[in-house]
Amino acid sequence: MSKWNMIKVWCCAFLAVFLLIPAFAGADDVTDSINEGLKSYQKGEHGSAVESLNYAVQLIQQMKGEGLEAFLPEPLSGWTAEPASSQASGGAMMGGAVAASRAYSKDSSSVDIQIITDSPMMQGVMMMFSNPMFATADGGKLEKINGEKAIVKYDAANREGEIQLVVANRFFIVIDGSDVSKDDLKSYAQGIDFKKLATVP
Image 1 (cartoon, rainbow, N blue to C red):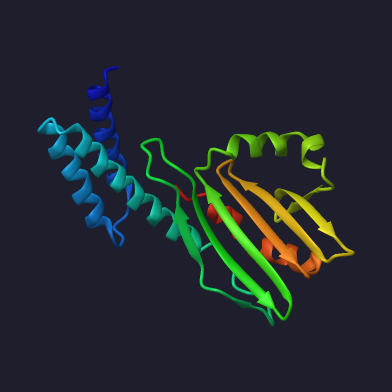
Image 2: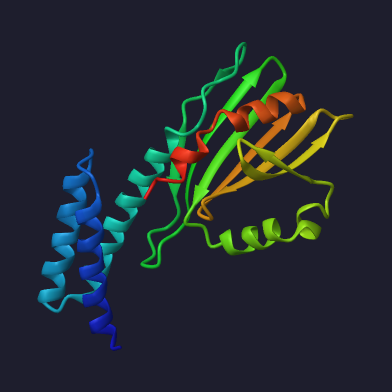
């Protein structure tokens, strides 16, 4: 397939994706960027077309990240939390990782949660979860949390640990804590609605 035919395919693909996006804030900017890309393509301005479509991708990724923020749990009793935030990696045509995160604290205790999707790392993460030898190589243990397979690492002496989960083979969740109990780490993991997350398009 020639470079220009590929650009045409990208244009059609972006239109198809856009039609599946619900009406939410910023959608007009996505439409404008896609239309600008199509107009540039029709004029033979392929560089401008790619730039506009890349910008549309970035906007859609940002929306996707903001959607993931809703799955970050509320703080446990006695804890406080920073506002949730999200970010998308560079708007390359092939897409990049989208992540939402939130920080929680209680006195000297802290927990950070990240939900990551569209990551090039996902294949490696899936290999780790499918092979118990890899999953437990550095002291982790396989457990089930709300029905999902998790790798739990916890150092009782230092009161620090990490929980990793994969949901629907698309979402990588990392819960990292310091000066925290294992029960609190697991409680934060249990506060994420895995079933609803799995239905996110």
